[in-house]
Image (tube, rainbow, N blue to C red; front, top):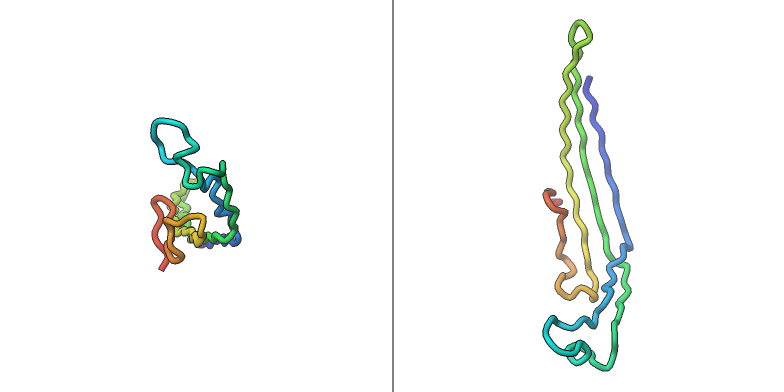
Length: 107
């Protein structure tokens, strides 16, 4: 018996907020003068423009022998990606994708 399954999930408008945009760099001394905007405290930049995509194909083969014996083999191929295009994350460009660890990139 052969079974083939597809699993997919798409996420849109995911939270890409940066909790403290005014974080000081590490170092000795008082925190407030080291902040990018010393006159302000913590700044939360709210954004919800992230996207995610997950696709997987699952294949399972089962062979039944005589006297109730059987053998089973399963295989799963999966791909996942998340796209962040938020000014709250200046390190990521609009086209850069973060891949889940151990996943294959989407074409």
